[in-house]
Image 1 (tube, rainbow, N blue to C red):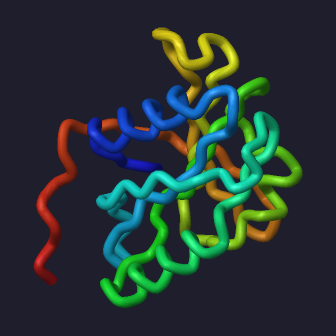
Image 2 (cartoon, helix red, strand yellow):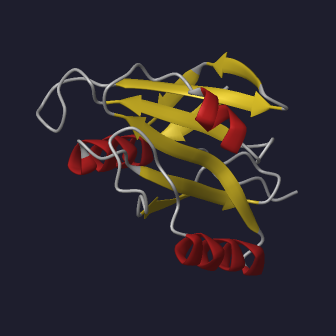
Length: 147
C-alpha cells in the first residue's frame, strides 16, 4: 500500500495537468528503507512526448547523487498518461528498475489540463510483474520513527 500526504498527491496531479498534453514525470524521494514519500521532485520529460516519458539523464544523475548524499531513495516514481488509462504500458514495465518503488500513474485523458478528476493509481513492478496497490491519502505523514 502507498501512503502519501495530501500536498504531495496534489502536487503530482498538478504537474500532470500542467504538462498535459506531454507526459509529466518525476520522483518522490524519502529516507532509505522508510517507504515514506517526503520530497517531491518534478522532472523534465526529455522526450517531450504525449505517449512516452524519458527522464533527462543529467537531471536524473544529479537527483541520484543528491539522494545518495542524503541517504534517500526513490519511494515513488510517477508519470502521466495523457491518452490512456493509468496502467503501466509495456515500455513502462520494461523501464521499471527500482523494485522497492511505488510506480504511480496519473491519467489526464478525460479532462486534460482543465478542472476535473484524474485517475491516480499505484503499482509495484518487480521483474516485469505488475501488482496494483491501494493508495491512501493522508493530511500529513506520521512523525518519523526514531529507532
